[in-house]
Amino acid sequence: MIGAGLRRRLRLLTKPRQVRRALSVEGMVSDAEAAKLIELAAGVSEDGCIVEVGSYRGRSTCALAIGAKGARVYAIEPHESFAGVLGGSFGPPDRRAFFENLLRVGVVEKVRLVNLSAEVVCKGWTLPIGLLWIDGDHSEEGVRRDFCAFEPFLHPGGVVAFHDARDPSGGPAKLIEELRASGAYEQTDAVGELIALRRRA
Image (cartoon, rainbow, N blue to C red; front, top):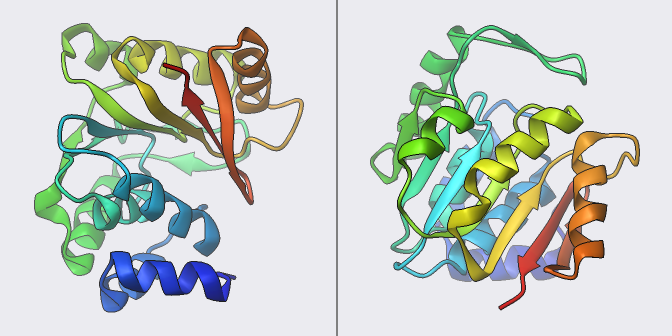
């Protein structure tokens, strides 16, 4: 559930009808987590973009696009057959649902879908990133690969957020602990299964 205070802030940031449509999209991100993504996206300036690794059917993508003021949103999602370590099954049918959902929510023109994996995309990447949202392969190897692909482009002061980050045995939690211990990142937010870190200047 979204608290009253966050609901008031979202009304100031966004269009309530669009938020309701986004929250009706199928996905594993909770309402409170989606609200936090809207808030994080709203903090990204136009000189940085928003990159999402792992989009499924577009629930979190819609939240990011609603929050984004002038920043572009890039959804890195192969939409190829894949069995997640948490038991989910994903594949090509999700691509159609992704576009249908973005059209219904009214954000399709704000999102660039890149149907390739992160390690392929990053080889030609040049854009500075203000917000990096990682919700793809949750294995330790997978989350580290996705993070390392885009970390070189993350602004000093930029935010990286991970989903399913509470399980200490999971890939996201292990990487987060390592990043905090390095001193290069500080935790700024924790909502449900979402944990966000800010890259120190």
